Amino acid sequence: MKGLRDQALNLANTQDSSGSYIFGGSRVKLPPFVTDANGDTVYQGDQTQMRVAVGDQRTVLLNRSGTETFTSVVRTNEKGEASGIGFFQVIDDVIDGMRNGVPSKVIAGIDELDQLQNALSLSLAEVGTDQNVLQSQKTVLEETRLSLKSVLSDIEDLDYSKAITEMNKHMLSLEAAQSSFAKISQLSLFNFIN
Image 1 (tube, rainbow, N blue to C red):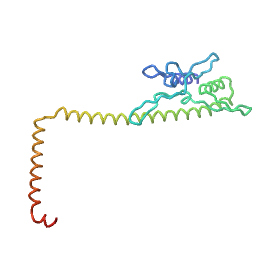
Image 2 (cartoon, rainbow, N blue to C red; image 1 turned 60 degrees about the vertical axis):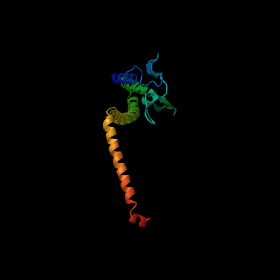
Image 3 (cartoon, helix red, strand yellow; image 1 turned 90 degrees about the vertical axis):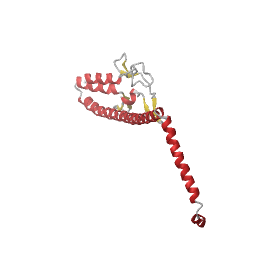
Image 4 (tube, rainbow, N blue to C red; image 1 turned 180 degrees about the vertical axis):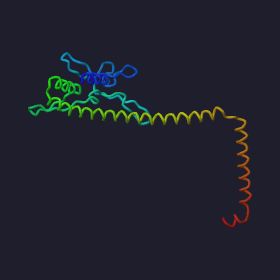
């Protein structure tokens, strides 16, 4: 259990390719979850969400707050008072219950771990949705880029003499059609219809 807890803490302090902490909100230069003097894991990030535009009227989250992903649970004490217990405190309490042989603490902790797992699943689903948006936007941008390259290639590869010859041919056809219409419109049937 302690090993799994340490893995979860390492995941909570994950950095992106530029060295910024993913789950620290806007405080990307400090690890979001640290151990304080009492041995408790505390969150030192903030709740700020930064969004990045990926297209016209489309944005995705660039970061996530640690408390949104690694949520807390509501625990009620013997007096009926409710309080929020942090993600890592729940795991620590289960470990403590196992070490000291307190089954009630372990059973309550397992229920709370289930709640934490559900919250992690929701966060993972949100990340998956953002990835789908990014993938579809990437496809749109690639198609647009290909279309623009094709148009640019057509413009750059234009043979001016061939284009002028083609335009003269179309103008000659247009003049012939207009001349024919002018002669046909002089016939008596057209006069009768008018």
